[in-house]
Image 1 (cartoon, rainbow, N blue to C red):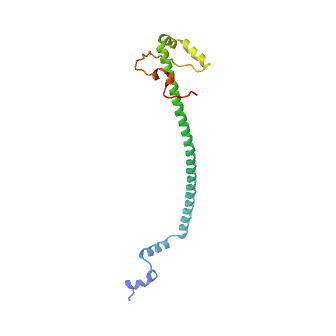
Image 2 (cartoon, helix red, strand yellow; image 1 turned 60 degrees about the vertical axis):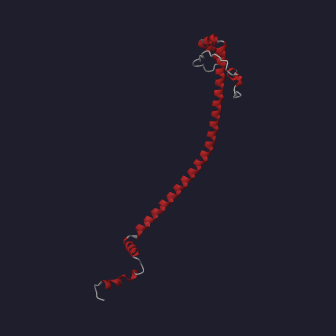
Image 3 (tube, rainbow, N blue to C red; image 1 turned 30 degrees about the horizontal axis):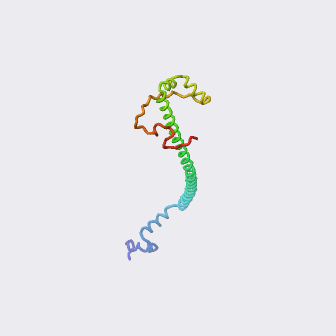
Amino acid sequence: MAQGTPESDVGSFECFTNYTAPEVFIQGLAGLVDQQDVESMIRAQKQMLQRFEKTNEMLTNCNQLSISRLKSTGAEFKKHTALLTEMKKDLDYIFKKIRVVKNKLNQQYPQAFNEAVRSSLAEEVLVEDVHEGPKPLEPEIIPPVTVSSSATEKDQDPDSDGNQHDLK
């Protein structure tokens, strides 16, 4: 073979005959890159990996703690919600009974009831009955209600309400 022909250059690449073209390219690049730079990049990546693993572990612990606290707080919240619902039912029942009593008084003694409600003497009596409790803001004036013949005993008798709550 003649010097300077492509066939003569093939002998210089005999060491790469077992490799593919991409592998030869990578090996050529590896010769250009400084090994100390590669090692420092690998160390930096390992340090970042350790930090990410620690952060991931801390976040996992935080999530577990949050889940346990959410469960206990959720149970307490349900209890308090049930208590408030029951208290509201009780207060609604009490106010309904008070309205029934006021309506009965207004039906039986309309003039006296309205005069008592309007007078300041009625407020003083209420305050004395409560033993220095809060004063009522404004007395409620209930107009006289006429009872029709179709009214049931339940409407007329405050003790015959369908909800039999015991006042606590």
